[in-house]
Image 1: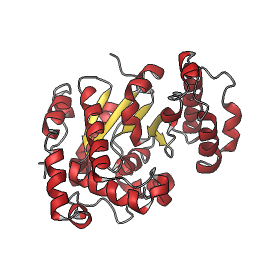
Image 2 (image 1 turned 180 degrees about the horizontal axis):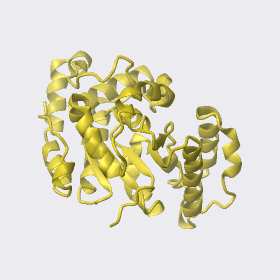
Image 3 (image 1 turned 30 degrees about the horizontal axis):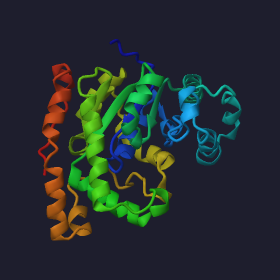
Image 4 (image 1 turned 135 degrees about the vertical axis):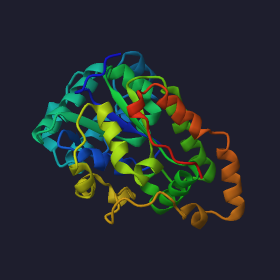
Length: 297
């Protein structure tokens, strides 16, 4: 499969895996534009409208979602006039991608990066509707993700669909890892380990730039915090730390859960082998694209 340098890129991963940080690093590149989470592919398929689904139409929820997105979140209500009246899924999706590329070109850039973490669960749909799509998977240690998910959903329940139980957090991370594993041999998919990115960002970004088809640019490490301010949804607890890239070691797991809960979580996560996942992705890359690995906790 030939990978096109100007095809859209989807940054995916389990929520609370550090996708906003990686998005900010990439969006600081002179050739890459990114915007706040569209959640487009969560609304394009009419999950509970069987007749519309059978006819290949978009969900009735999509237009209201895009009105909120362009008007309220991006401050670009004029883009709504570019949405098509034809509500066939394939046509509507192509039109949406064209709008995002128009805003990309307005910034003087040529590559559009879409970051909605939960799109990790919609990979098959995206590949069907956007045949030339490329994907960057961000994977983070399970105990840290579960702790962060539990904490943030209790702090901002309205924006996260309610408070998550421990089992809900575990299941979300496991499903995301399983989705990445299903894509392990596809040439248009690339995996980044969060811990490796934080420990030594430059070589990780250099390899990632090779996959994207751009040269590494120092601006990625210099300007990502300012970019993070534009992209973050602070009211939902999604933000890039302004004191810089921090050590990946987190104490949140020990702060959020008691000993019995920690033991239960470790037991539930023990069935997932992240080292095997990384190895599967690495095996299809050339040697100079290998991702630096860190030991699991």
